[in-house]
Image (cartoon, rainbow, N blue to C red; front, side):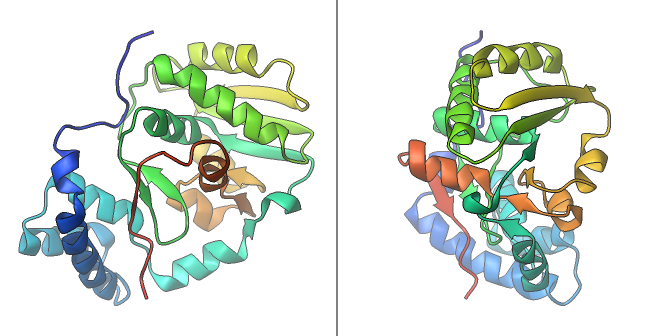
Length: 237
């Protein structure tokens, strides 16, 4: 497996240092003002990003993190706590595993306004298994084993490269867990998950449309990987 740092860009240390985080929080307030008045997030982030001379990575972090209060309220009403889970959970496989790979790779993770933690990896249809993939799946299995569930169904995107290999690795590493594991490689994962409940994902559109969801990654990082670097863009008071 290749040795790569998922989600790591050398300029991140500068883009997200203490001084620039203060600038990003100021820019986020401006973006939020526009979004809550009907402006699309991408247009608002371009306008504000140009004003503050932000890098593409900084703008991406703001887009991933910033959400209107109405949308946050919608998502929070459907959010399940870990002690409310039972039976079957449905996992957005690449979304979840890639975020954990980034955590192990010491790449940038963003704590967002809706409480999720998102990465900036942006693979866009290409995926390869790296050294951190095994660690990500292993720690995910440990966390799921501590929940009151009987089945975990992973959905992987068929059009994305190497998802067949990832399916095999999930079965291999989660063999012996105290819950049934099912891995499906399908087209249109997002469409399927939008109609499900007890979803594990940070995908914004799925969160808006699904029946209910569990915010797994922050819970897992708190329990198993508290040293993971997370920049905080969650405060919108």
